[in-house]
Length: 317
Image (cartoon, rainbow, N blue to C red):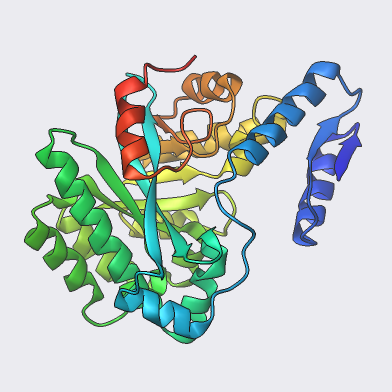
C-alpha cells in the first residue's frame, strides 16, 4: 500500500489507521509527489528486503520451546547484535542484543516465532534469563579482548516483578565479571507505563546498582511526564517510525525534536532507532541525538560478523 495526500496530518492519521489493520504499507508521501521522495521510499523498502535475515515467522511448538531453553542442539535461541554508534565520534559504542531461534529444519526464526509463545506459556522468565546470561558472558569475552562495548538486553517488564529476578540480574553480572554500567536493560514504553506501579521500586534498585535503564520505542506508548519523573531511566530510544519520516515530514520531525529536548532535560542519553539512510544520520545529528541504530550503520549480526564490522567501520558514508 502507498498512501499519498496533501495534508500531512490527515496523511499521518490515515497511515496510522492502515497500520492498525496490519496492512503492509510501502509508505506515505505528501502531494505533490516528487521523484526523489518516491526514490527514497523505494530505497528504504529495498534495504529492508535485502537485509531481512530470518524466515517468515510460524510459531514454535511448546515442546520445541521447552527443549531449546533446556539446551537442545537442534532448536534453541541464538543471539545477534546490532551496533549502536556514538554520533559525536562515529565509533561503535555498544550493541543491542536480539534473540533469534535456530531451528534444524526451518533455519533462523525471528522473535515472533517464540516470544509470544514464551509469554503465553509462562516461560518468558526462563527464556529471558538464558538470553541475558549469554549476553553478559559475551560482553565479558569482548572486554577480555579489550573491546569495551555496552550491551543492551530487552527485558519483559513482567519479569521485573518476578521474585528473585532482579537479584538474578545482579548476581549474574557479578559472577561473570561485567560491571553493571556496561549493561543496559531495555523495556518498551507501553509495557513500562502499564506496569509502572509494580516495577518502579525494582527499577530504582537496579539503577542504584549502576545498570542502565532504557525506555524503548518512545513515542508509541502513553508515557506521562509524572511517570517519566518517577522512573530513573538513563536512556530514551526514539521509535523508528518517527526517525524514518522526520527528514520529510514536519510532524515527525517535531516529535523527534520534542523527545530529544525532553530526554536532555531528564538527563537521559538519546538513541535514534531505525536509521536507514545518510539523510537520517544527518537529521538525528542535527537535532541532538547521542546514538544511532539502524540498517544504515549495521544490521543485526552474529559475533564473528560483529568483530569484522567493528574492524572495518569507519563512520558514515
